[in-house]
Length: 417
Image (tube, rainbow, N blue to C red; front, side, top):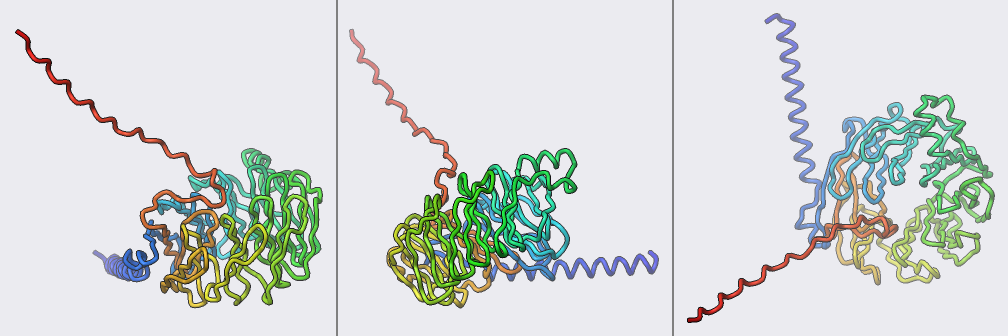
């Protein structure tokens, strides 16, 4: 063996030793971070799964965590997106989108596609396989995550524009290898506001709504951008909107939460406190959770805005599981409170899992560390999730026919002479 080969062998052995030591240290650290089943049992919870998102721990951090009813999506600062099955924790795929370290937004999805904006490009990924369905060059600098339904995707930009693109047309152009040069052909319409779009567009049936930094809410016809109504507030709207049935909830920095009729813009009620509201409100059933800056958590009646309770300790909504609401406090603890009255029943130190999903879709808790360690928690013994937002999306489980006991053997007839 030459001197050069000896050196390479020594370097390779040293690298392997460093990697092995790092892996052992990471595994040891993981075991310390993940809460034990004994700790979780005090909350009435159990760990459904844990997984590690794909990223470089020496330079990357988790930027966004988002979910739908079947997937958990992790976006790292480098641009790597990892998808997990939300019930089993199986890692479905991981892929780098765009160039390293481009600004990006959380993943949104419809039934088949996961869509994410990186830089000035919109990527569509087949949700279950991780294959790139298409990429689209955007005409302006995006300012929010997109909104999507089954027909169109809607993107807000820094200059106050909202663009609607036909999903069918984009797919056609991609298959014809005419993207990104012919991206403009997929545009259905462009609508303009007076300032930067600050809230992801929200499609709802025949309409789509969006907000701008000047405090205006716009609702337009999804197919042709015809204005249905415009609502002006006295403060910037920076929090994502919430929709439940025919009611739309808009939080403004003028310290007010507005509830309006989503079809015609009629004001239904408003809720005012002396602090700006910069976090999205969340609706579960008839409960509406609102968290003003440093103002605790309010639980309101979602229909009329009446206050059910207020809890000063709670700072951000996490999930509703059965008769309990889970939230974070200012110190990063996971808090369990009663859903009916807001009384605190348990607290667990969870500062390491600082990136938390506010889940209004299902009765699951999803949290991640900065380094991409993800856990999924559920109510103890509940293997079938509750779908809060879209209960009709819960898969129909096969019915198992009950076992039929075999009839007892007939007794032999007595012999006759």
